[in-house]
Image 1 (tube, rainbow, N blue to C red):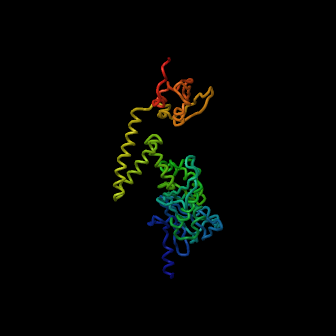
Image 2: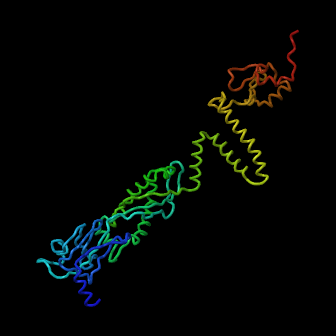
Length: 373
């Protein structure tokens, strides 16, 4: 730079940042050889903070004065820390070397995050489940000095892209640790994304503070569940709508038969014929069951006649139990007669076989007893 350019810069006494790039977080004000004149005017606009650094010596703790929004005439009164560092006991009237950094303190929004891989959660209903998640978050500069020391360094312009990838990775890893701790069941994750976002924000806000940043919000836009878990959730919803397992099995069967009937070709047409009959039968049984509940215990139908085995008194001793086929054989060989005593579950005592309604057909082919002489 020539002499004229140097002289031209000496006349520039306005220090300000008119930021036109929404992605720039920190901007270093450029001056020729970083020389600032006494009485220069520093303008810090709303949504900005300015820091003056002594001759680029940040690594030695030479971060000096911090300026909040306002207009300042640079003097020893407005720069007490820098004045102490420089040793200006009686003021100064010549250019001094320092760097001025402007920080944007407004929010940076719509920053994306996502889990690097599935997070393993222990769910009381589904056991161990692997879950993925992604969404957006927002941040802003909270402590400009910390941001300058921890992130910016000597960059002229520090953008959100310079830190976004690093933060995205940190959020993704931390969320994998946080998800098992948030206390929301897997089946409720998608319906409570706002609560999940708040819990995540509370858990990882401290990771941002160490860089001088404030995590303003975390939005969860989608929860990824394993396919088998999603199917189980769908099935549970169907079960709740239907009411019980028997009807759910009928529902599944009807769905399978319907899908088979929709297949093209003769096989599909033939299947469709079977579907109509089977579906009508199933629906008829269902309506009949709902219209006339059976008298069995707990609403279940009673056992078929003859299904319960009988005990038989043979030669004064209890024998059995015998199924219906065995009783038929005993009737044929004369072991079981109408006068034989029998008993089965549910009866109060022993009775004659000929008096049992469900056994009378066993003796239908036999002649009745002879009348007394």
